[in-house]
Every structure is written in C-alpha cells, then in structure tokens.
Length: 267
Ligand SMILES: Nc1ncnc2c1ncn2[C@@H]1O[C@H](COP(=O)(O)OP(=O)(O)O)[C@@H](O)[C@H]1O
Ligand SMILES: [Mg+2]
Image (cartoon, rainbow, N blue to C red; front, top):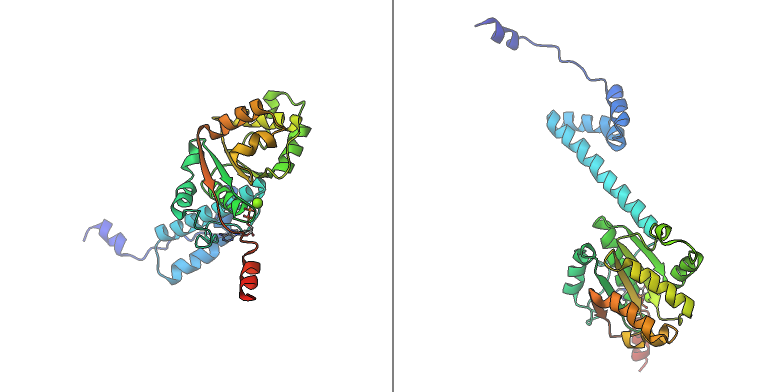
C-alpha cells in the first residue's frame, strides 16, 4: 500500500460549511429565494441522501421558478390586464363560432413576434373581452410587454399627450409595448380630434408592434364610427388590417345564457 492510498483510507475531517455564511453569500449574489430556502434544502438533501449537485440543482431551480413567478406577477400588474379571464376557462362549446385551434395558434404568440394585429368582432357578451384578455395574458407569459386599455381610457391618455413631441411619445405606455390591447371600440363614436389621435397611434405602431382590438362594429361601420371621415377610416383600417387576424364571433351572449335557459324552462 503506498502512502497516497493510505491517506485516502484514513477518515478525513470534512470542512463544514457555515449555513449562515452561505446564506449571506447567496443574498449578496442576489439569489434571495435560494438564500431563504437554503437551510430547508440542505436538510432535505441530507434526509434523502442526495449529493451536492442535486442540492445545488434544487436551489437554483427554485430561484429561477420564483423569479419567473415574480416577473409574471409584475408584468401582469403593469399591463393593466383584468384578472380571471383565461383560455383555460373559456367555454368553447358555448361559442362554436370560435375555433379552439385558431385560439391555440394565437396562443403561441407568433402573431405578436411578427407584429401582426388581431381584430375581435361580435355583438355584446360573446366573449370578445375575455379572449382579448386571455391572449394578453399569454403574451405576458411568452415574455412580451403588454398594455390593456378600454378605448375611453386610451383616448383620455392620448388627449393628455396631444402636444407631446413624437420623440417623447414613443415612450408612452400605449406606444411602446409589444402588444396593445384596446377593448370596447365602437360603443361611442369618435370626435374628429379623437379619430386623428387614434390614427397617430395606429400609424406609429404599424410594423413596430401588435394591436388587439375588440369591437361590436364591423369594419364596414368604421367610417361612420370615425366621425364620418372616410379618408381617415381607410388610412386607419389599411394599417390595422394589413397584417392581421380577424375573429368574427357570432352567437349568444354568455352574460344572458342563464336568463335564456330560465326563460326557456318557463316555456
Ligand atoms: N365562451 C365563454 N366561456 C366562459 N366565459 C365566457 C364566455 N364568453 C363570455 N364569457 C364571460 O361572460 C362575460 C361577458 O363576456 P365578455 O368577454 O365581456 O363579452 P364581450 O366583450 O363580447 O361583450 C365575461 O365575464 C366573460 O368571462
Ligand atoms: Mg367586452
């Protein structure tokens, strides 16, 4: 037996890591979640007889998962998207004019990557807002910046920015994000000034970012909705529809479905 193997055979005192110091180092490196769970993760690894690589993997996976959760929560908050409306809780059986496969394709966000637009049209209560919100959430999950506005809120914000020079306008919340969701277009007619502000936004975003818009008006009714200005309406629609997807939802109102059912049962 040579000396080297002898010394390997002898019991060696293993250097003990100081958990408190390790925790502090993780925190200083900005790995706050890993720091918080260090002691528990070490205990688990010892209990389950897992090696150091497995312990490290568990800690780093936890850090990455928690960071992603935090990013999502913050991005959703920032987007102004309402909560609770998702693809998972959309009842496709109730609305057969909405093809599940089309929504699944849109859920991949390829259209946003390609800076295309999406128009969701249909009468009240058919799920236009629900789908626009659900696809907005998907976009946030895919890592895109999203801003959600009802049209009246958007017009209000744009009116305040009327005199803002183009260079500064670019940084506005409705100009900058990869996806701008505009809900409820068509309930109120536009004034001429609002129509021209709307054109400025559409024309700025054209080829730069996506717009998802919900409306109870069909495209044919847009000139009338836009202060009767055919030229402006054509200019806006030309840009919006150039690279776009259109979902036409026909069918009953989800809001009224229980009422319909109870009226039917009363004969
Ligand atoms: N197919 C559906 N499955 C589940 N919930 C739906 C569906 N369609 C509409 N809803 C719900 O009904 C309500 C009205 O839908 P909404 O999307 O606001 O309609 P719209 O914007 O077309 O007027 C919302 O609470 C929405 O979540
Ligand atoms: Mg709506």
